Every structure is written in structure tokens, then in C-alpha cells.
Image 1: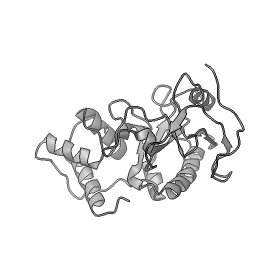
Image 2 (image 1 turned 90 degrees about the horizontal axis):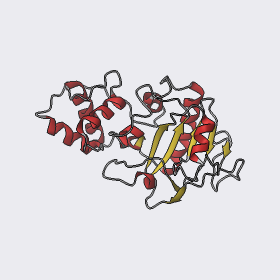
Image 3 (image 1 turned 90 degrees about the vertical axis):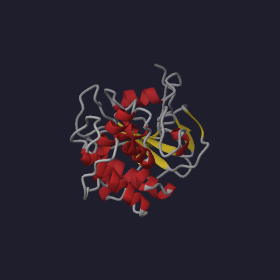
Image 4 (image 1 turned 180 degrees about the horizontal axis):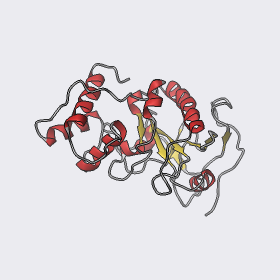
Length: 249
């Protein structure tokens, strides 16, 4: 695998202070944005080490990249300037938008993923993510509802960052939506009604069962079975209500 990144590259224009981004390693895998930044997408690398993930995102033949990589030890590496379009999302969709790469910042978390032994995310890594996200959300005015997992935007293809990711830790800092407490157990009149509501919230429902699993993975990770039930119906109702009331910003 060819490595084309340049280590110890000069800081990008407008780069964040050293306590947030520890080094810059310039990846060649980017192009120009066509949309303003409105989202952050979180991934896991699903590779044996951070250095292998870094090498892949620097390989021109791989044609993949992200804006940031956070090691399990909490080191933040910037690979692509925020102003440029990194190649992390693939075929994806969120709230009507299909060019997610143009509209988002991609953050890769060094993690073995489900392939190499899924486990909780390291505390130093999560602390570094909170710090980085706080700067990105403020800088780009990104709504909490648009801080997403790869599985949210590509439910038929991806399951990262997975059911052990600490979304509610981000929510405590106002960096992601909290998991609501359903006031009602809502059974939709039929599954089509649920899917329409799920699409209205933001998900691609082309593969309905995959969309349900993605919703469960994010909002009810204790049970991911792809089945529509009254509990996730209640969760979706609360999420849509908060959105309609303007509380999801």
C-alpha cells in the first residue's frame, strides 16, 4: 500500500489549538465541497491499528479519507482541511441530502470494530472527541440532530460506530441529541406510517428493516432486531415532537 500522507505538515489555515488537534498529516484524498457544512459523521476504523487506518486514508488508490482520526490514546490527527470534501460517507442519505461528503465533516475513531473484536470506546478517545466536537459544532453551527453515526446515513451498508458508542455522553455536553424517554408506547396504525415518520426524521427507508435496525442501534441499542414495536414508536414520536417544537437544534 502506497503511503502518500505528509507527516508533520504545516497546520491548516484556521486550524484549532494544539490541545484539540495534535498533528496534521495531509491526505491526498479530497476534493472541493459543493455544499456548506451542516453535519458531522462519526465512524470507527475497523482496522487493527490507528497507523494502518492512517496509511489507508493516505493511499491515493484507496480513495477514502476523513477530516480527523482519533486514536484510542486520544491523539487527534487532522488529514483534510474542514473546508475540503473528504471521502468518508460513501453512498448515503440524511434529511433529503445525498452528497453527505460535501455537507459533512468525517471523524474516524481508532477501533477494532465488529470485525476485530467490538468493545467499549476508550475513555481518552471519547474525551478527545468531546473536545474536538465542541469546537467543530461551534465553528460550523452544526445542529445536534446532525451529529450522526455512519449507520444513520447508510443503514443498509454500515453499523458503525455501533451499539456501544456513548451517544449520551455527547448529549450531556450538548453535542448530540439525548435519547428521549417515551411518554407513550406508540403502535403506528401500520408499518407504512412508521416508515414515513422515520423518513421524516431523516433516515433513508429504501431498505425498511435496515433503517429500523439503524434507528434501534442509535436510540435503543439494547435490542436491535429490525422489528417495529411500540417502544421505538414512542421514541420516534418524542424525537419528531422535539424537532417540531424547535428543541432539536
